[in-house]
Length: 582
Ligand code: GLC
Image (cartoon, rainbow, N blue to C red; front, side, top):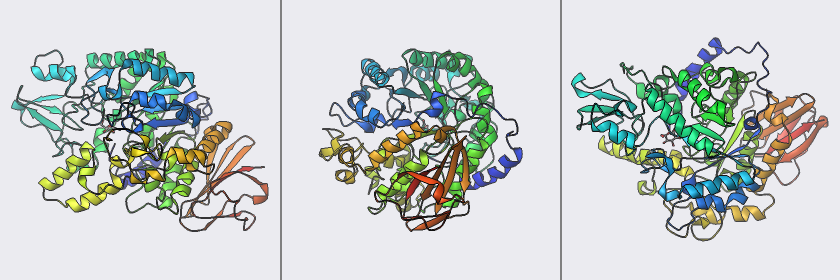
């Protein structure tokens, strides 16, 4: 999603969640129930920007294959690959025109098979993006569907015949005019597209469509993939009578779009048809509008999905910054709501967000490296499955784009045109996207100091960040204290200490506005994590005697400043430390 859940609605939501509550009284075996996908660290690869093998300026599967040893060296267990299916690329592959084929820019099925083999030989699992809230308008289904009102594929999509008048307004996230109904004169009808007009929404009420999707999933599962990330799936179920929604829907579309009728039936069916028949993990983008919604998606006894992927945490940062108290509050509430049942994903970035260090850390030369390491410490010590977006392990930063022509992202460009059309403030808009556009996270992976950061020998499809001569994998490889090597150490620490996966989480010094401190504990094993999220030296009262701690890892190469009191720790700017309790 490019838009996170608006914070006002989010705040209102909390009260609702707290009162409606989720039943935590009954002890359940599920939280400690061991699963490979709970213990995994997921590394997300944006194939278009990872590594180009043939000089066309676009990353590809052979490029990823050439970097498998690097990927393995990170210590991660799972790769989540953004869509690689045939696509006209209106939305960089999130508009699929053939679900059983590979996008030409990325290679072919042979390359795919080699990729899976290469990953499996190295003990790495592969999770694929499944984009079935919508297809491309160039998919054969849609071509058939729009050809006549009586075509057998007509009901694969949502059509509204024009003689009924205009359907009730639906907000489109990507359409230039934000109108999700597009009129098609061929059959005198409107079709629905929550995203761009080239991404018509599929009709999940149609059992034939659902069966097609399950067959597609089995096709990939039979090829040996290890999981699915269901793109925008919380929007898949719709009230197909299309009632009026309240005015202002666009400010809160998630409330009306997510968790529509029968969504759980579809997921249960998908689970029994596909997930239950393979050893695959499943995660959907978004987790509904409340903790209850999230639980209903992922509690193991419901047999739907494995883990929730909620946006409340990642949505906190704004170009003006964010409050650490808010950040701690959100992550702590999510953890406590899932302390007994269900399972969460932990992430601070993905392909729809600006760079993690620019949003949540500090990308100035003085603090970039330290704050990137501090954020790695956070993501890799929380309960839940950590997702790390490619390039974040190097501390890659926002793109530094200057003009609108630097951007490639369709919704970013469409909104610019929209602002022009309505005589909006395009200068202000440009400032906003410089900080927020998801293109910031899509610049080519910075491999080395050679031309185009070693990403391509051709012209990259989107500009390389000019800071690649200082920030790249090759340099960081050689530096024991680099972000990259810190990330590797952190992954190893998590793998060696299941307490960091399953252990209970307790927030310490809750009201501290600069330091995030928490305890993770499982049986005798206890770990203390202290993270300074500020540019200043800060103190934290942990209530834990320093005498009883042993330092396991820290992001400053020099040994920590001496402890100032029995249970008071002083942390340098963006300092991160993990202690084991003796
Ligand atoms: C999801 C994807 C995003 C895409 C959108 C439409 O939010 O993460 O990248 O643009 O769905 O498919």
